Image 1 (tube, one colour):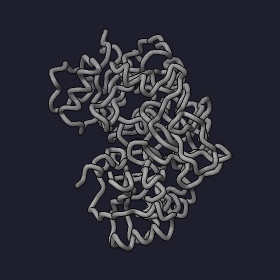
Image 2: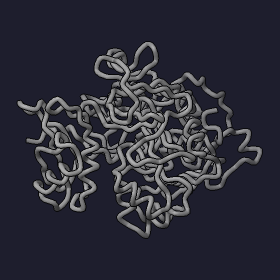
Image 3: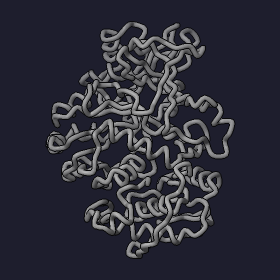
Image 4: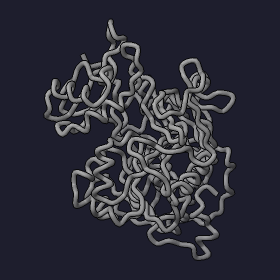
Length: 468
């Protein structure tokens, strides 16, 4: 059973939990979740797919849970998505109705409300593991968003593998304030909790104060969240009673890793994944947690690192290669996009992630970044943007940094750094030149007020690359 903690028979027999989910000022027991979500499932009727406006509310929790009980794939829609992208998601997915909250413009689709106090105790047969759980749209950095089709079996495999790596169990209280339209917040945070059976607390916004007050044992955050936490030492120290702090969705800057470790007593766990692959790499609760490294393949996961010709590259901790993954948690393909699917998912089951990485002799992985924006080919050298960003962030006059490769007639690409801080460009260029090899020194540093980021805190480097 995918949502194992919501087994109706077990809950009816006494395996209830009064505070299973706390979100939006409301606390739901397992009995509330089973009864109300089953009532939602009944109202879905013969729907083939439905859209869910994925706000952090009880209605979203019940909508998603009801869909999984009924076996109806749902399409999580970000509340702040643009009109064009939302119209594309609705049309491309074939969603037949809005379930739960309504956006300002429902796009002509009918509405199925979630009734918070309705209850049904009908028993549904568990859908096939091979059935789709949801269709989640990618961020659309290379054109309109693509619908990633993920099965129930993939979700279960990923959560179980993470539970083994993190010793995640029903005694945990999982806390986060992340969006419920991404893998991190929705699949790991909410669905993971409903499968494992731990308490789940959504803080609304991921503020340091909210995290400090939540009393959790397991915290999820993105680098932006952890940067704010370490800037509030009292809030950071309040997390010392937690068991595990997890960072993902973007690289955690080494200075933030070090400060978080100092203030909380916990070296954060870093992990790697994507909408298409879910989480495939992670450091372990009982293993080394090395700043800037995302650990080892989870149970059932295989990885390989190849050069431009498809040949294996050495696992020496330095040689950069294209990362491929094969695992039971991979997506089924892009909806209505067979050509795009074939470009990244081979008949042999290997998924070409589009990321470049290095692997050391022990098998630990470090993600260099996206092939398209983080691998800079300059003067015959292949340079990872992340290494330069890490060096910049170690300078006391730098608060944020992003490095890209700009077209250059002589070098092919020149290294350009965008920095939030009060150091001078000349000072930073010299500083990196002292810390790293000469060819890794930025040719230009641009001081900016802020870096463009998406909802998960990831820097939108393609926007930087279009700056004049």
